[in-house]
Image 1: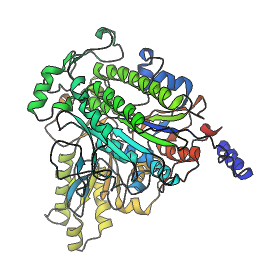
Image 2: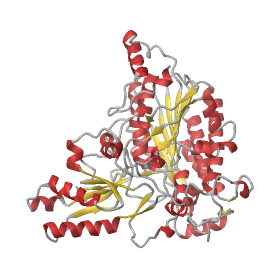
Image 3: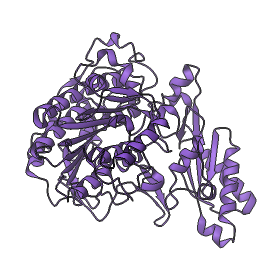
Image 4: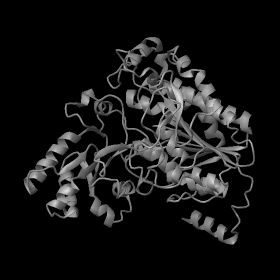
Length: 556
């Protein structure tokens, strides 16, 4: 509080304090590592190179107590929150998917039937855009603040990782189309009618193909991976073309199996090669688009998707995940070296964070006598419907219940002349009676109460009145949601995320480069503080829905 008051006093004494910092970076680099927990920076640190994560830690500023402040902690919501400076309650991206009451269907966060995919070899009648994002982003504010002279480019393997970071006004967003041979980078008609020449030339190099001509073995002798479980264990999924989740991974034979499944180049998403491919593409984007080449600050967003795919497949305890992080460290080193050479050392500013963390594999937790379990959503739905049928008569009272959100049949409730808020609260009361459920809030309470701390506040920050369900749930720590009641604890393999617990909320936040001081802070901060901090660095307007605060240590 004292530091905040001092910072405010400085602003009062000199209204031009921040505006006097006219020497802005030529390029802002946003790096988001999908499903990277904070502890991963330290767990494998002894084997990091000096020029990757260690360089960022050594020469930059480290916020060691960075958390997400809402539920659910998923990719789309994470990227939207990082770049908009606010929570799903404001920006509206309440998940990777959500149930749409108007269409009675589950929709995706960036799906847009008014657009087409540009650059794919497959004919398509679907597309993608940032249309569901309700607020502006820091990248939008940079574009507007420069009278649209600043360039904003977003790249990722995932479409949502690229699109939501770029905001509404990005010059381009590119992602990896694994469905099209040979694994090209594509975009949307929202941004362009055809791919730029440099993207076409990059695609013609067919790097997805060349990266998958080799095999994957560990960087170091496999018995030296002491920070991971044994290579052969019961907590990992074996991917197509393999009978077990063990090294080595022969890409040639595995590709044949993936090809039979119509997804040959999806294989690169579960290998370290996917991170290298994206790094190559990002470096080419910086050079070809001449980002950071003049005095107008540009912005590139780089979202690494492989850690998420590998975490879901193998889990964070796996040798595969550890080896991938060690190789990603080298990709980060290559990126920094390229930025030094192309934009110039001291001419760019970079932040690195993650869109969410991950829970250890539930079966792994249970085997090690730690709290874990399964939240059987289907069984809960049956129990809830039975309760409602007994109370109000047999009918289809539930429209959608596939996770932590329950959507009730509001038309039916209205037809039966029942009070919606009363039914919502009764459902919440019933759900909290279930052993695995530790929290349940109705939409009525979320709209009429203000929760100041804990899981209730996180639910409220993730609740959007137009899009969220009638009741939001919280499950026990270590419990994972499952829609198949036949799944037992022993059959759970790979990790997941989405909760408000520390394993999902605690992520890295590193700052590096021009005007960034060296040091670290244990002050609890949120990823929603990133966008307003950049706005202060560049002297531009905050994104429209900003609820985060500038990170004052960066300006000390």
